[in-house]
Image 1: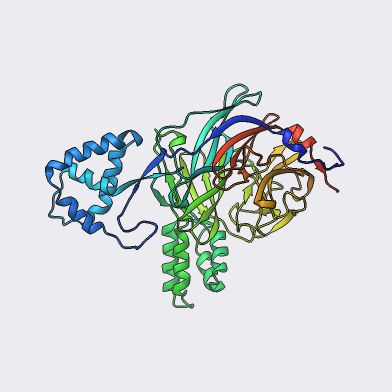
Image 2: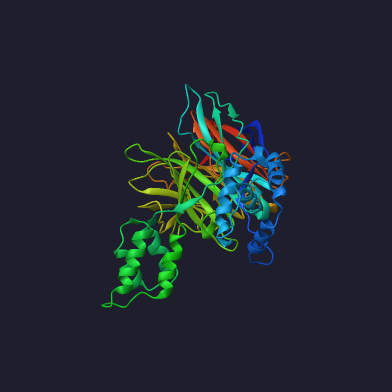
Length: 500
C-alpha cells in the first residue's frame, strides 16, 4: 500500500482485467404464472374469472383438442412442465364452477391455459450480480461458482435468478450455458424471529406491555401455529388488559413476511427463479448480496440480504439456503437494517455477526448483531469526500477476507449521477477501523459501459476471491452484466493508507 497519493485522473482503472464476458437480458427466458383476468397489476381491478370461465365452458368440444395441440406446439418447448402448470392453475379457479358440471381432462387443461401467462423475467434488463463459491467447490485449481442476477421484466418487477461457472487457478472465467427453462416455486409459511417482531412492532407504535407479553410466550424462533396459540392465550387472559386488535393484526400481517420455497431436485440452478412472495416484496426483490457464511463449527450457510419493494416502500429481507434448491426468507429489523445495501461478513468477528450498512442513505457504516436479523445500531466507516463519490457512498457486497484485512468493494456516485466502484481495507479484528482506501475508482463507466436502461452506472453486489484473483461480476447501466478480474495484491497495494 502506498502511503502518499499524487492525484492522477483515474489511475486505478488499469487494475481491472476485462474478461470480455457479456450477459445480455434474454427475453425468451419466461416463467409460466397464474393469470386472472381483471387482476392485472395496472388498470381497473376486479376479477373477470367467472365470465371467462362461462365462455370456456360454452366452447364446442370439437375445438378443445385442436386448441390444446396448438398451445403445446407454440409453448411446450419453452417450459419443463407446461401441462402440470395448466393443471395447477385450473385447480385454483375451478372452485367457481358448479360442482354438477363435469369437465373432460382436455377442457380442464384448456381452462388452466386460459388462466396462465408467460412472464419474461429478463424482458427489460439483467443487472446487479453477486457471486459465491458453489457448494460443489471445484476440482484441482479450478473453483465452481454461483452468480445471482437481478432480472427485471414487465412493470419493472424484479426477481432473483442464477448462473453458474468456473474460475481457473490463473483467473480465467468461464460461464456455463443456462438451462432453456425457468420456473418459480410455490411458497409455504416460514419461521419467525422474536427479536425482529419486537423491533417491527415497536416501530409500528404498538403498546410495549402488550408486545412484551405476547413475545414472552414465544421462543426465540417460532412458527405460525405457535404465534396463533400465543395470540389466543393472551386474548383470553382476562387478568390483564387484552391486546388491541391493531396489535394482533400487526403481528399476523408480519407473519406473512416470512416464507419458504423449494424447487424440484431435477431442476438446474439456472432454472430456479426466486419470485416475489411476501407483501413487502410484492413489486420486486432487488440487489441480492449473497455470502458464503462459515460458523464457528465450520458449517456453511449461504445468506443473501436483498431489498424488498412493494411499490411504495423498501425494506430488507434475509435469504437463507444450503443447497440453492430450498430457500427461506424473513424480514430484518433495526436502525442499521433500513434503506438499501446491508451486506453480511462471511463469518463472525469477536463472537458477533457483522454487516456493512448504508442506513443513513449516503455513507458506509458497519454494524454488529447477536442474531443476524436484528441490527440495532451502526458506526460510520466512510463519508463521501472524493470527487467521484460526493453524492453518496455504498457497498458492493460482502467483505472479502484477505491476510491484509477485510477487502470491501464500494460504489460512489458523482456528477451526472455516475456510479463508479472503489475499495476499502478494514482491520480483521476491528472492522470499524479503515486501514486503506482507493482514492480513484477501480472501475468506471467508460464509453463501453455507460449506455443502457440507467446510463452511467457500473454496480456490483459482490465479488469472489480465488487465490490472488478477485472475480467481480458487475452490472452495466442496469441493463446487462460483465465480469472483470483483479489481482487482490495489486488492488491493495494501489490503496492509500489512512491515518491511525
